[in-house]
Length: 563
Ligand SMILES: Nc1ncnc2c1ncn2[C@@H]1O[C@H](COP(=O)(O)OP(=O)(O)OP(=O)(O)O)[C@@H](O)[C@H]1O
Image (cartoon, protein in one colour):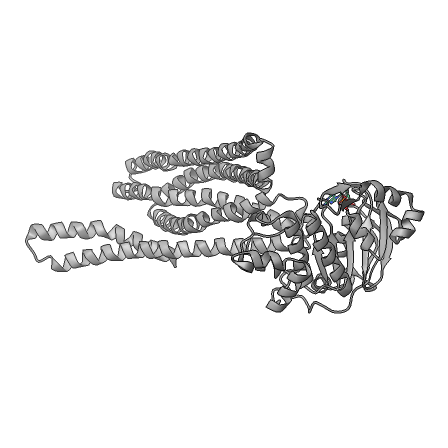
Protein backbone atom coordinates (compact mmCIF):
# COMPACT_ATOMS: atom_id res chain seq x y z
CA UNK A 1 0.00 0.00 0.00
CA UNK A 2 2.74 2.42 1.01
CA UNK A 3 4.69 1.44 -2.12
CA UNK A 4 1.69 2.17 -4.32
CA UNK A 5 1.17 5.53 -2.61
CA UNK A 6 4.85 6.39 -3.09
CA UNK A 7 4.49 5.48 -6.76
CA UNK A 8 1.38 7.68 -6.97
CA UNK A 9 3.27 10.54 -5.31
CA UNK A 10 6.16 10.15 -7.77
CA UNK A 11 3.74 9.98 -10.72
CA UNK A 12 1.99 13.16 -9.58
CA UNK A 13 5.38 14.85 -9.23
CA UNK A 14 6.33 13.69 -12.75
CA UNK A 15 3.16 15.06 -14.30
CA UNK A 16 3.36 18.41 -12.53
CA UNK A 17 6.10 19.94 -14.80
CA UNK A 18 4.15 18.82 -17.88
CA UNK A 19 0.98 20.45 -16.57
CA UNK A 20 2.92 23.59 -15.68
CA UNK A 21 4.30 23.69 -19.27
CA UNK A 22 0.79 23.37 -20.65
CA UNK A 23 -0.28 26.21 -18.39
CA UNK A 24 2.44 28.50 -19.73
CA UNK A 25 1.43 27.57 -23.32
CA UNK A 26 -2.21 28.36 -22.53
CA UNK A 27 -1.15 31.64 -20.94
CA UNK A 28 0.73 32.56 -24.15
CA UNK A 29 -2.32 31.85 -26.29
CA UNK A 30 -4.53 33.93 -24.01
CA UNK A 31 -6.98 31.00 -23.46
CA UNK A 32 -8.93 30.36 -20.24
CA UNK A 33 -6.76 28.55 -17.77
CA UNK A 34 -9.06 27.94 -14.79
CA UNK A 35 -9.46 24.25 -15.62
CA UNK A 36 -5.72 23.70 -15.99
CA UNK A 37 -4.98 25.63 -12.81
CA UNK A 38 -7.49 23.55 -10.91
CA UNK A 39 -5.98 20.38 -12.41
CA UNK A 40 -2.49 21.44 -11.33
CA UNK A 41 -3.70 22.24 -7.84
CA UNK A 42 -5.34 18.80 -7.59
CA UNK A 43 -2.08 17.20 -8.72
CA UNK A 44 -0.09 19.10 -6.11
CA UNK A 45 -2.55 18.06 -3.37
CA UNK A 46 -2.61 14.43 -4.55
CA UNK A 47 1.20 14.32 -4.69
CA UNK A 48 1.64 15.82 -1.23
CA UNK A 49 -1.20 13.74 0.23
CA UNK A 50 0.07 10.48 -1.26
CA UNK A 51 3.59 11.14 0.05
CA UNK A 52 2.38 12.08 3.53
CA UNK A 53 0.08 9.07 3.72
CA UNK A 54 2.73 6.64 2.50
CA UNK A 55 5.19 8.12 5.04
CA UNK A 56 2.61 7.63 7.79
CA UNK A 57 1.71 4.07 6.76
CA UNK A 58 5.36 3.13 6.56
CA UNK A 59 6.17 4.72 9.91
CA UNK A 60 3.26 2.89 11.49
CA UNK A 61 4.32 -0.44 9.96
CA UNK A 62 7.87 0.17 11.15
CA UNK A 63 6.72 0.84 14.72
CA UNK A 64 4.68 -2.36 14.62
CA UNK A 65 7.73 -4.32 13.49
CA UNK A 66 9.85 -2.79 16.28
CA UNK A 67 7.10 -3.53 18.82
CA UNK A 68 6.77 -7.16 17.72
CA UNK A 69 10.54 -7.64 17.77
CA UNK A 70 10.75 -6.19 21.31
CA UNK A 71 7.89 -8.31 22.59
CA UNK A 72 9.21 -11.54 21.11
CA UNK A 73 12.65 -10.70 22.52
CA UNK A 74 11.44 -9.92 26.02
CA UNK A 75 9.31 -13.07 26.19
CA UNK A 76 12.33 -15.03 25.03
CA UNK A 77 14.54 -13.40 27.67
CA UNK A 78 12.00 -13.99 30.46
CA UNK A 79 11.88 -17.68 29.55
CA UNK A 80 15.67 -18.20 29.48
CA UNK A 81 16.89 -20.79 31.92
CA UNK A 82 19.16 -19.39 34.65
CA UNK A 83 22.02 -21.45 33.14
CA UNK A 84 21.67 -19.47 29.88
CA UNK A 85 21.36 -16.21 31.80
CA UNK A 86 24.69 -16.98 33.53
CA UNK A 87 26.38 -16.62 30.13
CA UNK A 88 25.07 -13.17 29.18
CA UNK A 89 25.27 -9.64 30.45
CA UNK A 90 21.99 -7.91 31.30
CA UNK A 91 23.20 -4.57 29.88
CA UNK A 92 23.94 -6.21 26.53
CA UNK A 93 20.46 -7.75 26.45
CA UNK A 94 18.98 -4.33 27.18
CA UNK A 95 20.93 -2.83 24.26
CA UNK A 96 19.54 -5.54 22.00
CA UNK A 97 16.03 -4.77 23.26
CA UNK A 98 16.31 -1.03 22.70
CA UNK A 99 19.00 -0.22 20.16
CA UNK A 100 19.07 -3.21 17.76
CA UNK A 101 15.30 -3.25 17.42
CA UNK A 102 15.38 0.43 16.37
CA UNK A 103 17.57 -0.52 13.39
CA UNK A 104 14.65 -2.57 12.09
CA UNK A 105 12.63 0.65 11.81
CA UNK A 106 15.01 2.01 9.19
CA UNK A 107 14.80 -1.20 7.21
CA UNK A 108 11.03 -1.01 7.03
CA UNK A 109 10.74 2.70 6.34
CA UNK A 110 13.56 2.98 3.81
CA UNK A 111 14.75 -0.34 2.58
CA UNK A 112 11.48 -2.04 1.74
CA UNK A 113 9.81 0.82 -0.12
CA UNK A 114 13.00 2.00 -1.83
CA UNK A 115 13.62 -1.57 -2.86
CA UNK A 116 10.06 -2.07 -4.09
CA UNK A 117 9.63 1.25 -5.94
CA UNK A 118 13.22 1.29 -7.23
CA UNK A 119 13.10 -2.28 -8.55
CA UNK A 120 9.71 -1.69 -10.18
CA UNK A 121 10.83 1.51 -11.95
CA UNK A 122 14.13 -0.09 -12.91
CA UNK A 123 12.46 -3.13 -14.44
CA UNK A 124 9.92 -1.00 -16.33
CA UNK A 125 12.62 1.19 -17.84
CA UNK A 126 14.85 -1.76 -18.66
CA UNK A 127 11.93 -3.46 -20.41
CA UNK A 128 11.32 -0.38 -22.57
CA UNK A 129 15.05 -0.15 -23.33
CA UNK A 130 15.13 -3.81 -24.31
CA UNK A 131 12.30 -3.24 -26.77
CA UNK A 132 14.00 -0.08 -28.09
CA UNK A 133 17.27 -1.83 -28.96
CA UNK A 134 18.26 -5.24 -27.58
CA UNK A 135 21.97 -4.79 -28.39
CA UNK A 136 22.28 -1.46 -26.59
CA UNK A 137 20.27 -2.97 -23.77
CA UNK A 138 22.78 -5.84 -23.63
CA UNK A 139 25.66 -3.40 -23.30
CA UNK A 140 23.83 -1.48 -20.56
CA UNK A 141 22.94 -4.69 -18.73
CA UNK A 142 26.58 -5.84 -18.83
CA UNK A 143 27.80 -2.58 -17.25
CA UNK A 144 25.08 -2.77 -14.58
CA UNK A 145 25.82 -6.44 -13.89
CA UNK A 146 29.47 -5.61 -13.17
CA UNK A 147 28.40 -2.82 -10.82
CA UNK A 148 25.90 -5.01 -9.04
CA UNK A 149 28.56 -7.69 -8.58
CA UNK A 150 30.80 -5.05 -6.95
CA UNK A 151 27.84 -4.03 -4.77
CA UNK A 152 27.30 -7.67 -3.83
CA UNK A 153 30.93 -7.99 -2.77
CA UNK A 154 31.09 -4.77 -0.76
CA UNK A 155 27.63 -4.70 0.88
CA UNK A 156 28.32 -7.48 3.44
CA UNK A 157 31.01 -5.23 4.91
CA UNK A 158 28.25 -2.86 6.00
CA UNK A 159 26.59 -5.75 7.81
CA UNK A 160 29.81 -6.82 9.51
CA UNK A 161 30.69 -3.27 10.61
CA UNK A 162 27.14 -2.65 11.85
CA UNK A 163 27.18 -5.89 13.79
CA UNK A 164 30.49 -4.96 15.43
CA UNK A 165 29.18 -1.46 16.19
CA UNK A 166 26.08 -2.96 17.81
CA UNK A 167 28.20 -5.42 19.77
CA UNK A 168 30.08 -2.43 21.13
CA UNK A 169 26.77 -0.70 21.93
CA UNK A 170 25.90 -3.86 23.90
CA UNK A 171 29.22 -3.54 25.74
CA UNK A 172 28.40 0.11 26.53
CA UNK A 173 25.09 -1.10 27.99
CA UNK A 174 26.79 -3.85 29.99
CA UNK A 175 29.46 -1.51 31.40
CA UNK A 176 26.86 1.12 32.30
CA UNK A 177 24.68 -1.49 33.98
CA UNK A 178 27.70 -2.72 35.94
CA UNK A 179 28.41 0.81 37.20
CA UNK A 180 24.78 1.54 38.08
CA UNK A 181 24.39 -1.86 39.75
CA UNK A 182 27.00 -0.96 42.36
CA UNK A 183 26.74 2.82 42.24
CA UNK A 184 27.55 3.50 45.88
CA UNK A 185 30.43 1.00 45.89
CA UNK A 186 31.87 2.66 42.78
CA UNK A 187 31.67 6.06 44.49
CA UNK A 188 33.07 4.78 47.79
CA UNK A 189 35.95 3.13 45.89
CA UNK A 190 36.70 6.36 44.02
CA UNK A 191 36.34 4.29 40.84
CA UNK A 192 34.18 6.73 38.84
CA UNK A 193 36.88 7.68 36.35
CA UNK A 194 37.89 4.02 35.78
CA UNK A 195 34.27 3.16 35.12
CA UNK A 196 33.99 6.10 32.71
CA UNK A 197 37.13 4.88 30.93
CA UNK A 198 35.68 1.36 30.66
CA UNK A 199 32.55 2.78 29.07
CA UNK A 200 34.62 5.07 26.86
CA UNK A 201 36.49 2.04 25.46
CA UNK A 202 33.25 0.39 24.37
CA UNK A 203 31.73 3.67 23.13
CA UNK A 204 34.88 4.31 21.10
CA UNK A 205 34.60 0.87 19.50
CA UNK A 206 30.95 1.61 18.66
CA UNK A 207 32.01 4.89 17.06
CA UNK A 208 34.86 3.28 15.10
CA UNK A 209 32.75 0.47 13.66
CA UNK A 210 29.89 2.91 13.02
CA UNK A 211 32.27 5.07 11.00
CA UNK A 212 33.46 1.97 9.10
CA UNK A 213 29.85 1.16 8.17
CA UNK A 214 29.28 4.74 6.98
CA UNK A 215 32.57 4.54 5.04
CA UNK A 216 31.51 1.38 3.21
CA UNK A 217 28.18 3.00 2.46
CA UNK A 218 29.90 6.05 0.97
CA UNK A 219 32.32 3.86 -1.02
CA UNK A 220 29.47 1.82 -2.46
CA UNK A 221 27.55 4.98 -3.37
CA UNK A 222 30.52 6.45 -5.20
CA UNK A 223 31.31 3.14 -6.90
CA UNK A 224 27.72 2.90 -8.04
CA UNK A 225 27.92 6.51 -9.23
CA UNK A 226 30.09 5.14 -12.06
CA UNK A 227 27.40 2.76 -13.27
CA UNK A 228 25.26 5.18 -15.25
CA UNK A 229 28.13 7.23 -16.78
CA UNK A 230 29.87 3.98 -17.75
CA UNK A 231 26.68 2.69 -19.35
CA UNK A 232 26.24 6.02 -21.18
CA UNK A 233 29.77 5.77 -22.56
CA UNK A 234 29.20 2.19 -23.67
CA UNK A 235 25.88 3.08 -25.30
CA UNK A 236 27.37 6.18 -26.94
CA UNK A 237 30.26 4.17 -28.40
CA UNK A 238 28.21 1.19 -29.55
CA UNK A 239 25.12 3.21 -30.47
CA UNK A 240 27.19 5.83 -32.35
CA UNK A 241 28.75 3.09 -34.47
CA UNK A 242 25.33 1.56 -35.16
CA UNK A 243 23.90 4.96 -36.13
CA UNK A 244 26.92 5.54 -38.41
CA UNK A 245 26.32 2.27 -40.29
CA UNK A 246 22.61 3.01 -40.34
CA UNK A 247 21.47 0.02 -38.22
CA UNK A 248 19.49 2.28 -35.89
CA UNK A 249 18.04 5.78 -36.10
CA UNK A 250 19.66 8.66 -34.22
CA UNK A 251 16.30 9.23 -32.51
CA UNK A 252 16.44 5.69 -31.03
CA UNK A 253 19.92 6.36 -29.66
CA UNK A 254 18.77 9.65 -28.10
CA UNK A 255 15.68 8.00 -26.53
CA UNK A 256 17.88 5.23 -25.20
CA UNK A 257 20.31 7.73 -23.67
CA UNK A 258 17.44 9.66 -22.07
CA UNK A 259 16.20 6.49 -20.42
CA UNK A 260 19.68 5.87 -19.11
CA UNK A 261 19.61 9.27 -17.39
CA UNK A 262 16.26 8.42 -15.86
CA UNK A 263 17.73 5.18 -14.50
CA UNK A 264 19.92 7.07 -11.99
CA UNK A 265 17.08 7.61 -9.47
CA UNK A 266 15.71 4.04 -9.28
CA UNK A 267 19.23 2.62 -9.33
CA UNK A 268 20.17 4.71 -6.29
CA UNK A 269 16.98 3.61 -4.56
CA UNK A 270 17.84 -0.06 -5.05
CA UNK A 271 21.38 0.54 -3.77
CA UNK A 272 20.11 2.29 -0.65
CA UNK A 273 17.74 -0.59 -0.08
CA UNK A 274 20.59 -3.09 -0.29
CA UNK A 275 22.73 -1.08 2.16
CA UNK A 276 19.89 -0.67 4.63
CA UNK A 277 19.06 -4.33 4.33
CA UNK A 278 22.60 -5.12 5.47
CA UNK A 279 22.08 -2.98 8.58
CA UNK A 280 18.78 -4.75 9.22
CA UNK A 281 20.37 -8.17 8.74
CA UNK A 282 22.99 -7.28 11.35
CA UNK A 283 20.23 -6.34 13.82
CA UNK A 284 18.17 -9.44 13.08
CA UNK A 285 21.26 -11.61 13.58
CA UNK A 286 21.86 -10.09 17.02
CA UNK A 287 18.23 -10.61 17.96
CA UNK A 288 18.40 -14.22 16.80
CA UNK A 289 21.47 -14.79 18.97
CA UNK A 290 19.25 -14.35 22.03
CA UNK A 291 16.98 -17.15 20.81
CA UNK A 292 20.06 -19.32 20.24
CA UNK A 293 21.15 -18.85 23.88
CA UNK A 294 18.62 -21.39 25.00
CA UNK A 295 17.15 -23.88 22.56
CA UNK A 296 14.84 -25.22 25.21
CA UNK A 297 13.54 -22.23 27.21
CA UNK A 298 11.22 -22.59 30.15
CA UNK A 299 7.47 -22.16 29.66
CA UNK A 300 6.46 -18.70 30.83
CA UNK A 301 3.37 -16.80 31.74
CA UNK A 302 1.48 -19.95 32.72
CA UNK A 303 -0.95 -19.19 35.50
CA UNK A 304 0.38 -21.26 38.36
CA UNK A 305 -1.98 -23.66 40.16
CA UNK A 306 -3.41 -22.67 43.53
CA UNK A 307 -0.77 -22.09 46.13
CA UNK A 308 -1.16 -23.19 49.73
CA UNK A 309 -1.79 -26.67 51.08
CA UNK A 310 0.05 -29.08 53.30
CA UNK A 311 3.80 -28.72 53.93
CA UNK A 312 6.01 -30.46 51.37
CA UNK A 313 8.81 -32.99 51.84
CA UNK A 314 12.17 -32.84 50.08
CA UNK A 315 14.72 -35.54 49.30
CA UNK A 316 18.12 -35.40 47.59
CA UNK A 317 19.22 -38.78 46.32
CA UNK A 318 22.94 -39.03 45.38
CA UNK A 319 22.92 -35.70 43.54
CA UNK A 320 25.91 -34.78 41.40
CA UNK A 321 26.01 -31.34 39.83
CA UNK A 322 28.32 -28.75 38.28
CA UNK A 323 27.32 -25.35 36.87
CA UNK A 324 29.20 -25.84 33.61
CA UNK A 325 31.80 -28.14 32.10
CA UNK A 326 34.54 -25.61 32.85
CA UNK A 327 33.60 -25.35 36.54
CA UNK A 328 34.44 -27.71 39.38
CA UNK A 329 31.91 -30.26 40.59
CA UNK A 330 29.67 -28.50 43.16
CA UNK A 331 27.64 -31.45 44.45
CA UNK A 332 29.43 -34.79 44.82
CA UNK A 333 26.64 -37.17 45.77
CA UNK A 334 24.45 -35.09 48.06
CA UNK A 335 21.76 -37.08 49.91
CA UNK A 336 19.40 -35.94 52.67
CA UNK A 337 15.72 -36.10 53.57
CA UNK A 338 13.53 -33.29 54.89
CA UNK A 339 10.16 -34.39 56.34
CA UNK A 340 7.07 -32.22 55.81
CA UNK A 341 6.85 -29.25 58.17
CA UNK A 342 9.37 -27.79 60.58
CA UNK A 343 12.69 -26.22 59.81
CA UNK A 344 15.86 -27.66 58.36
CA UNK A 345 19.04 -25.58 58.38
CA UNK A 346 21.96 -26.05 55.97
CA UNK A 347 25.33 -25.05 57.31
CA UNK A 348 28.88 -25.41 56.08
CA UNK A 349 31.87 -23.43 54.87
CA UNK A 350 31.47 -20.89 52.10
CA UNK A 351 31.24 -22.59 48.69
CA UNK A 352 30.13 -25.94 50.16
CA UNK A 353 27.13 -25.98 47.81
CA UNK A 354 24.33 -24.90 50.16
CA UNK A 355 22.65 -22.30 47.95
CA UNK A 356 22.99 -24.73 45.05
CA UNK A 357 20.64 -27.09 46.93
CA UNK A 358 17.93 -24.42 46.55
CA UNK A 359 18.75 -23.77 42.89
CA UNK A 360 18.24 -27.48 42.19
CA UNK A 361 14.97 -27.67 44.15
CA UNK A 362 13.62 -24.68 42.17
CA UNK A 363 14.88 -26.48 39.05
CA UNK A 364 16.90 -23.47 37.93
CA UNK A 365 19.46 -26.14 37.01
CA UNK A 366 19.27 -29.91 36.70
CA UNK A 367 21.63 -32.43 38.32
CA UNK A 368 23.98 -34.39 36.07
CA UNK A 369 22.97 -37.50 38.00
CA UNK A 370 20.89 -38.39 41.03
CA UNK A 371 17.40 -37.13 41.87
CA UNK A 372 15.81 -34.18 43.62
CA UNK A 373 12.38 -35.13 44.92
CA UNK A 374 9.54 -32.92 46.14
CA UNK A 375 6.79 -34.92 47.85
CA UNK A 376 8.51 -38.06 46.55
CA UNK A 377 8.23 -36.93 42.91
CA UNK A 378 11.31 -36.02 40.85
CA UNK A 379 11.25 -32.25 40.24
CA UNK A 380 11.78 -33.00 36.52
CA UNK A 381 8.41 -34.78 36.52
CA UNK A 382 6.59 -31.84 38.09
CA UNK A 383 4.96 -29.29 35.77
CA UNK A 384 7.30 -26.33 36.23
CA UNK A 385 4.52 -23.88 37.14
CA UNK A 386 3.13 -26.25 39.78
CA UNK A 387 6.61 -26.90 41.18
CA UNK A 388 7.44 -23.22 41.57
CA UNK A 389 3.93 -22.37 42.80
CA UNK A 390 4.53 -24.76 45.70
CA UNK A 391 7.57 -22.81 46.85
CA UNK A 392 8.55 -19.44 48.20
CA UNK A 393 12.16 -18.45 47.61
CA UNK A 394 14.13 -15.73 49.36
CA UNK A 395 17.49 -15.12 47.71
CA UNK A 396 20.55 -14.30 49.77
CA UNK A 397 20.63 -10.65 48.73
CA UNK A 398 16.84 -10.38 49.12
CA UNK A 399 16.17 -8.53 45.87
CA UNK A 400 13.57 -5.82 46.01
CA UNK A 401 12.34 -4.38 42.74
CA UNK A 402 11.78 -0.70 42.07
CA UNK A 403 8.14 0.19 42.55
CA UNK A 404 5.90 0.40 45.60
CA UNK A 405 6.03 -1.78 48.70
CA UNK A 406 2.69 -3.30 47.70
CA UNK A 407 3.95 -4.18 44.20
CA UNK A 408 6.93 -5.91 45.78
CA UNK A 409 4.79 -7.87 48.20
CA UNK A 410 2.29 -9.14 45.63
CA UNK A 411 4.95 -10.03 43.02
CA UNK A 412 4.53 -13.75 43.66
CA UNK A 413 0.87 -13.57 44.72
CA UNK A 414 -0.91 -11.03 42.50
CA UNK A 415 -4.35 -11.87 43.90
CA UNK A 416 -3.49 -11.48 47.59
CA UNK A 417 -6.18 -9.70 49.60
CA UNK A 418 -5.57 -6.71 51.89
CA UNK A 419 -6.14 -8.98 54.90
CA UNK A 420 -3.50 -11.47 53.68
CA UNK A 421 -1.05 -8.62 53.09
CA UNK A 422 -1.76 -7.29 56.57
CA UNK A 423 -1.17 -10.74 58.09
CA UNK A 424 2.26 -11.22 56.49
CA UNK A 425 3.24 -7.68 57.45
CA UNK A 426 2.46 -8.55 61.07
CA UNK A 427 4.28 -11.90 60.79
CA UNK A 428 7.41 -10.20 59.47
CA UNK A 429 7.09 -7.25 61.85
CA UNK A 430 6.83 -4.85 58.93
CA UNK A 431 3.45 -3.49 60.09
CA UNK A 432 5.14 -0.84 62.24
CA UNK A 433 7.31 0.31 59.36
CA UNK A 434 4.37 0.57 56.96
CA UNK A 435 2.24 2.42 59.53
CA UNK A 436 5.01 5.00 59.92
CA UNK A 437 5.33 5.69 56.20
CA UNK A 438 3.30 8.68 54.93
CA UNK A 439 2.21 6.74 51.82
CA UNK A 440 2.05 3.34 53.55
CA UNK A 441 2.13 0.43 51.09
CA UNK A 442 2.18 2.92 48.19
CA UNK A 443 5.68 4.06 49.22
CA UNK A 444 8.18 3.76 46.38
CA UNK A 445 11.19 1.72 47.48
CA UNK A 446 13.68 2.98 44.85
CA UNK A 447 16.09 1.16 42.55
CA UNK A 448 16.76 -2.29 44.06
CA UNK A 449 14.90 -1.16 47.16
CA UNK A 450 17.70 1.21 48.16
CA UNK A 451 15.30 3.38 50.16
CA UNK A 452 14.88 0.49 52.62
CA UNK A 453 17.37 -0.76 55.19
CA UNK A 454 19.08 -4.12 54.61
CA UNK A 455 16.97 -5.77 57.33
CA UNK A 456 13.76 -4.27 55.92
CA UNK A 457 14.64 -5.55 52.46
CA UNK A 458 15.11 -9.05 53.84
CA UNK A 459 11.81 -8.94 55.65
CA UNK A 460 10.01 -7.60 52.56
CA UNK A 461 11.48 -10.55 50.63
CA UNK A 462 10.29 -13.01 53.30
CA UNK A 463 6.85 -11.37 53.44
CA UNK A 464 6.63 -11.67 49.66
CA UNK A 465 7.50 -15.37 49.81
CA UNK A 466 5.03 -16.01 52.68
CA UNK A 467 2.22 -14.23 50.84
CA UNK A 468 2.44 -17.00 48.26
CA UNK A 469 1.39 -19.43 51.04
CA UNK A 470 4.17 -21.78 50.00
CA UNK A 471 4.26 -25.45 50.95
CA UNK A 472 8.03 -25.09 51.05
CA UNK A 473 9.91 -21.94 51.99
CA UNK A 474 13.51 -21.68 50.78
CA UNK A 475 15.32 -19.02 52.74
CA UNK A 476 18.90 -18.18 51.83
CA UNK A 477 19.92 -16.19 54.85
CA UNK A 478 21.94 -13.04 54.27
CA UNK A 479 25.51 -13.20 55.49
CA UNK A 480 25.34 -9.59 56.65
CA UNK A 481 24.70 -8.93 60.30
CA UNK A 482 21.52 -7.36 61.52
CA UNK A 483 20.78 -5.26 64.55
CA UNK A 484 19.00 -6.96 67.45
CA UNK A 485 15.55 -5.66 66.48
CA UNK A 486 15.83 -6.87 62.88
CA UNK A 487 17.43 -10.13 63.98
CA UNK A 488 14.60 -10.86 66.38
CA UNK A 489 11.95 -9.86 63.84
CA UNK A 490 13.49 -12.19 61.26
CA UNK A 491 13.78 -15.06 63.70
CA UNK A 492 10.12 -14.67 64.65
CA UNK A 493 9.06 -14.46 61.02
CA UNK A 494 10.89 -17.70 60.25
CA UNK A 495 9.43 -19.38 63.34
CA UNK A 496 5.92 -18.36 62.24
CA UNK A 497 6.62 -19.69 58.75
CA UNK A 498 7.94 -23.00 60.13
CA UNK A 499 4.61 -23.57 61.87
CA UNK A 500 2.73 -23.31 58.56
CA UNK A 501 5.11 -24.82 56.05
CA UNK A 502 8.37 -26.69 55.51
CA UNK A 503 11.23 -24.23 55.89
CA UNK A 504 14.68 -24.84 54.43
CA UNK A 505 17.21 -22.24 55.42
CA UNK A 506 20.82 -21.75 54.43
CA UNK A 507 21.85 -20.48 57.83
CA UNK A 508 24.60 -18.05 58.65
CA UNK A 509 23.34 -17.14 62.11
CA UNK A 510 23.66 -19.30 65.18
CA UNK A 511 20.28 -18.04 66.33
CA UNK A 512 18.68 -19.50 63.19
CA UNK A 513 20.52 -22.79 63.49
CA UNK A 514 19.44 -23.15 67.11
CA UNK A 515 15.81 -22.81 66.01
CA UNK A 516 16.09 -25.64 63.47
CA UNK A 517 14.54 -29.07 63.96
CA UNK A 518 17.27 -30.62 61.84
CA UNK A 519 20.66 -29.36 60.67
CA UNK A 520 22.41 -30.60 57.51
CA UNK A 521 26.16 -29.99 57.60
CA UNK A 522 27.70 -29.69 54.13
CA UNK A 523 31.33 -29.70 53.14
CA UNK A 524 32.84 -29.68 49.63
CA UNK A 525 29.67 -30.77 47.89
CA UNK A 526 28.77 -33.56 50.32
CA UNK A 527 26.58 -33.95 53.38
CA UNK A 528 28.91 -34.81 56.21
CA UNK A 529 26.42 -34.91 59.11
CA UNK A 530 22.73 -34.47 59.93
CA UNK A 531 21.29 -33.89 63.39
CA UNK A 532 20.14 -31.40 65.98
CA UNK A 533 22.40 -28.73 67.45
CA UNK A 534 23.06 -30.83 70.57
CA UNK A 535 23.80 -33.99 68.56
CA UNK A 536 26.14 -32.20 66.20
CA UNK A 537 28.00 -30.26 68.86
CA UNK A 538 28.64 -33.61 70.50
CA UNK A 539 29.38 -35.57 67.33
CA UNK A 540 30.69 -33.42 64.45
CA UNK A 541 34.00 -31.61 64.59
CA UNK A 542 33.28 -29.27 61.66
CA UNK A 543 29.93 -28.23 63.10
CA UNK A 544 31.48 -27.60 66.50
CA UNK A 545 34.12 -25.44 64.87
CA UNK A 546 31.53 -23.57 62.78
CA UNK A 547 29.36 -22.98 65.81
CA UNK A 548 32.35 -21.65 67.71
CA UNK A 549 33.93 -19.49 65.01
CA UNK A 550 31.89 -18.97 61.86
CA UNK A 551 28.29 -18.28 62.66
CA UNK A 552 27.09 -14.75 62.93
CA UNK A 553 24.94 -13.97 65.88
CA UNK A 554 23.35 -10.95 67.45
CA UNK A 555 24.34 -10.05 70.95
CA UNK A 556 21.58 -8.96 73.32
CA UNK A 557 22.91 -5.40 73.28
CA UNK A 558 22.23 -5.22 69.55
CA UNK A 559 25.87 -5.31 68.44
CA UNK A 560 26.25 -8.12 65.89
CA UNK A 561 29.43 -10.03 66.65
CA UNK A 562 31.33 -13.10 65.62
CA UNK A 563 31.49 -15.74 68.21
N1 LIG B 1 25.75 -19.50 38.69
C1 LIG B 1 26.92 -20.09 38.96
N2 LIG B 1 27.76 -20.41 37.93
C2 LIG B 1 28.93 -21.01 38.18
N3 LIG B 1 29.37 -21.35 39.40
C3 LIG B 1 28.60 -21.06 40.45
C4 LIG B 1 27.33 -20.41 40.28
N4 LIG B 1 26.78 -20.25 41.51
C5 LIG B 1 27.65 -20.78 42.39
N5 LIG B 1 28.74 -21.27 41.78
C6 LIG B 1 29.87 -21.96 42.41
O1 LIG B 1 29.38 -23.11 43.06
C7 LIG B 1 30.00 -23.32 44.32
C8 LIG B 1 28.95 -23.51 45.40
O2 LIG B 1 28.19 -22.33 45.50
P1 LIG B 1 27.02 -22.16 46.57
O3 LIG B 1 26.44 -20.79 46.33
O4 LIG B 1 26.11 -23.31 46.49
O5 LIG B 1 27.81 -22.20 47.93
P2 LIG B 1 27.32 -21.91 49.41
O6 LIG B 1 27.67 -23.09 50.19
O7 LIG B 1 25.91 -21.47 49.40
O8 LIG B 1 28.27 -20.69 49.79
P3 LIG B 1 27.98 -19.38 50.71
O9 LIG B 1 27.85 -19.86 52.11
O10 LIG B 1 29.23 -18.58 50.52
O11 LIG B 1 26.77 -18.71 50.17
C9 LIG B 1 30.89 -22.14 44.54
O12 LIG B 1 32.22 -22.55 44.31
C10 LIG B 1 30.48 -21.11 43.51
O13 LIG B 1 31.59 -20.41 43.03
